[in-house]
Length: 188
Image (cartoon, helix red, strand yellow):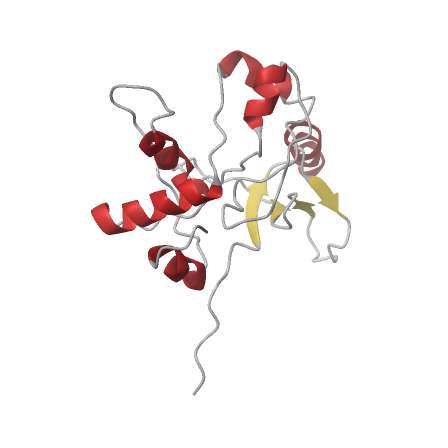
């Protein structure tokens, strides 16, 4: 018997919304997702929205469940350049195992929401994120996906400031072959 298929990432997340057209407007005009018009007619209202790296958010018009903390997170590439410039800019995006943190720019419509909340941003090299994934696995037995290891990578590098630094470590959505390479010493 052959080995079972191994997941390499998240293809899509499906969320219930009360109003699909309003949700499409929010996720496309405010967040920057792109509507994918290839969704078949499933017999209920919905929409498919694409991220810059091909992952999707599926909107389903249905009752919205009580908030129990369920969520999904989108990440953006090169926020630091936008903060330094004082406005959205095109970033240098290169696909990597840190694929949960990828977009070419912060949207113009998002900038007024982001700017008052962010004093600065750091750009962390992929090799340092790989070091953080390895350190988390070896020292505290936590498997973090690439984007989830960005904050610990910044803290471990010393660029996140002095004193105590709190990091939210998220997700274990990492290709197992890539994880094995990183644990073996690869730079990601």
